[in-house]
Image (tube, rainbow, N blue to C red; front, top):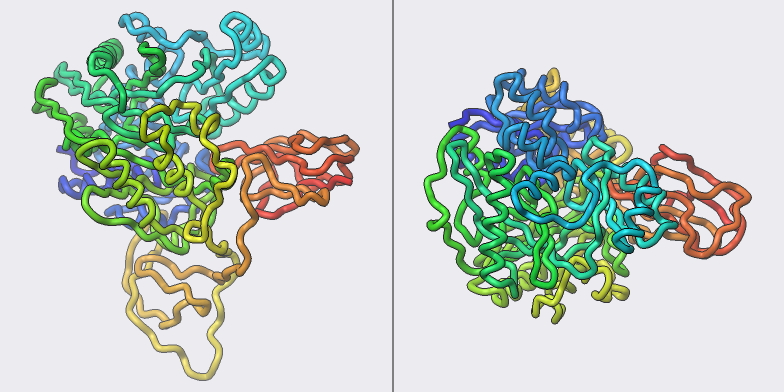
Length: 607
């Protein structure tokens, strides 16, 4: 068995891996950016090493910095989590070249399946049909136009080296092709470190159903069960469940066998997921994710298997100890993703900030996989997944009702979350009757009146400033506290006698974390979020969230209409259109591409 595992990731998945390692007696090593020095995964790991930088490119996508942390910590294995380098063959090779075990498939399998184009070709060779599309990267809008003419509109532009809906854009007609290509390529580069994109036909009412596979190095390849991930927005999953409802068992068996064929075709080892689109009784190969999926807990709850444990065991060279016939699936499991997004009006706008309250639900059959606690900050620089709430029930209706109860018990304040949208989805008759599809949330579910309630959206917290100085003749009383310090790039927990001063505005000191510097609370609610922008109606165009301006689409002197996009803002790896809410002429442009902005900042003035 492995002795020390470095987790080359952050947030919820890093915490998830750390916990299973602890149960198996395996030491853990965390890595962190400057913004994550006090993150939950850092607090839970046995050791932690600084990568430097703030953005993903400067930290979690910095191979030399990760290799240095491996060498300094003496880790004998690396778990990549999901996102970042989890599907990067070059990273896997860099790890194994150092004599360190990569907890995942061989680099050759990642190369075939991590590239969504070559995975289509491999699946076809294995006799598994895919969604009609191009099997090569695209570089010119004319290629989108010719594809749309051949297969009809809309068409999907997708990231060749990623998944999870990142870098995917739906093109409804020829006029959208050029901008959609640019946006998809930018998002793919930002999230996966590769800008390549390709084309597929966009099915009109499909369900997204994926098959969990597990393979060892001794020739065994098993399918463990399917997951229905059809409740999505922006092509990213909100709710996942297993087994798929209203799904014929003969199709389930055929899909499982197809997933095994795809895995064998690329010499797959470890845990992976083969994704399909299902429509009109037919299923089509979509892609293979050569990593652990965000939604893996629903498979764990119905099979009783710890997939991270089996990842570690397979990486250690152990064979699977059960056969396909011995895989048992009982009951029904549902997972919802709790993202830092404001779903008000169905806009799902990124909502970075500091979590002032995070109260987890309880009760039988309830599991919360979180990467944050009260007092932690959700940064604009990373993915906005805060936690995953998972429940099990003896059947789907019992699981659905249990999830509704658990969601209502969950309290988050300081940032907006997707919980109100999750409640709307789970409560809807279409979901209860399994009449949903990947387009259902955005096309059929009416979220126009939805607002992030006070339980999920509190006053924002500003952690800028300096600590208050002690005044008076008498020194303050001192108490023994555990304090986080960094020495030569390695994180240590030490006990120190420090002044007994909680934050003067009521924010308590948390053991193991530095006190917040100059914390202040705003009595007003944060600006209302909108993925399509905010404007005051007076002609002042403002941004609803913290982020980076990636492109200006208007200039001084331009005439703009109501709803016309003025600029594109990137926050949490998602591009958001900032639109005008007044017709007129642009009088001022106050930002440029590359500028960082905060909620309420003015980007343009229209008169």
